[in-house]
Figure 1 (cartoon, one colour):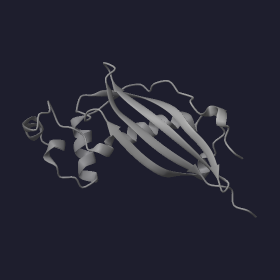
Figure 2 (cartoon, helix red, strand yellow):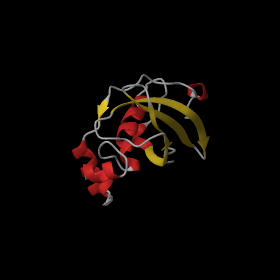
Figure 3 (tube, helix red, strand yellow):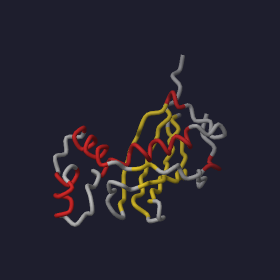
Length: 150
């Protein structure tokens, strides 16, 4: 069943702040195999003009995808999450994510379409710090696969 086009433009409340920890950044950098010292060494980060370590670019996926869960869980939308696969992800940064940031995400449905029986939903996540400064915009594309025919 096609998703309702009237959901395009719907925004969801900002998430509770997520405090970015230095150790979480280090763990993420190690997990993705990125040895850039600005992610793990405060002195290296300072030498590059940062107050503390910064996060690799895809670090915010964890919090923006969790925030997109508000969209997925919206019973009025009717998205069957058991059929959902992650289609695409992109980011546009105003500044790097830094250790100590407290980030909140506001999710908005940007597009809803159907293609070959699959529902495709584009979600924009606007990430701000606790002062309201924009940090990054993340776009997530989710594909709800068409039910298999008997």
